[in-house]
Length: 55
Image (cartoon, rainbow, N blue to C red; front, side):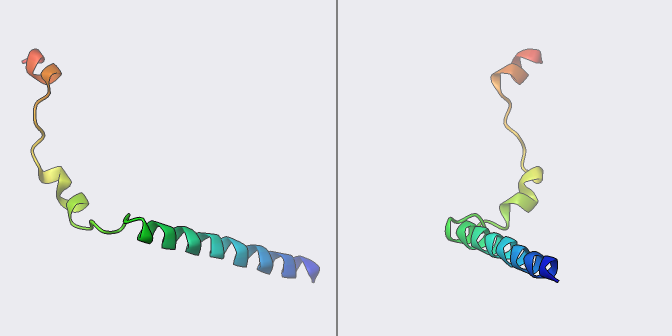
């Protein structure tokens, strides 16, 4: 029975850690740009000097 209590306490601590990490990332601005990542692959890449030299 004591193992069950330990597992519940550990799971609550881990869930709290994930909640704190999520709230930190929201406050740090990690979730603000939800449009650009989905269309980034559609943008044309500019040629770098190495790519220009190969042509």
